[in-house]
Amino acid sequence: MTECTQSSFGFHPLFRREVVAQFDGGDITSDAGGLLLREVDQKLNLTSRLGACFIDHRRSDKIEHRVEELVAQRIYGLALGYEDLNDHDQLRSDPLMGVLIGKAEPKGTDRRREQDRGKAGAGKSTLNRLELTPEKADATARYKKIVYRQEALDELLVDLFLDSFSQPPSRLELDLDATDDPVHGNQEGRFFHGYYREYCYLPLYIICDEFVLCARLRRSNIDASAGALEEVKRIVAQIRKKWPQVEIILRGDGGFSRDAIMSWCEENGVEFLFGLAKNKRLLKIIGKQLQEAKVQFEETKKAARVFTEFSYQTRQSWKRERRVVAKAEHLEKGANPRFVVTSLSAEKMEARALYEELYCARGEMR
Image (tube, rainbow, N blue to C red; front, side, top):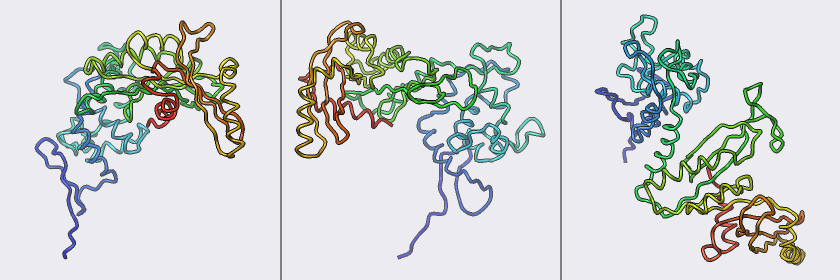
């Protein structure tokens, strides 16, 4: 049988122009994969929606690159591996970049100044003005006049998540996490973090499955949960505005088992499941189970787990008793106890399943 090899690939048009990838010469690029990203962008309308999260104070009669185009150029550049703004002094001449950012004339033959002809995209200086505009800049600013609206960007992240569902889900698990973002110089706000043993920031993330609902850069001289409740309130309100009946479960490690967060959840019908740091009181409570796990290990020489649960209240920081599930585990290296605190009842989920199936699953968030 004749073996046919496809020699051309069609993509979304650029205004009245066809966009076709072929292998017969002509305009050649090493970044043709960007066309696949553009197909996704066309479907989600992502860069256009993101561009709407900015306020443009520039004079309209002086503008050659709309905010949506600048945002698209920077995002496509990052996605294609060009992190440095200096790279765009060459990328702007690639007709592919003109296609990706939606220029009507992707070869830049319609540019106003002669020195810009053949360069459809923006240069590094223009993109720099997009990224480094002060928060309170306005039309009176000399150079940097494109201001992002944080509340609009926050809302967009959740909207994109909500739009991904064809029908309302019955349950959502929101994972809270704080991790290190190392710094390598004298950046503003740098602090040494004892746990990570380095100078870093401590960004907060809230994730559901593969979707980032919140990404907030923070200094590292703070508690891991700092600001988390405010973000949770905003996200939960936005979700419930669309799906009032959806069950929401917050998950996080011991850095988020704070009374303020748990109390808010209890008052607002949001379930929670957080890690709980061990202490002498907790270890004493599960002493019998720890011994039982040790005996099992000595008999089988395999890791042994015994689960139990009880009501527990801290002596000062918690306002009320809460359900605590304990994993009394014994490994070759010795005892390995773990604790979680939750609002989920035993009738809804028994101890082992709560820990192994629901809590440990938070480690699989992308």
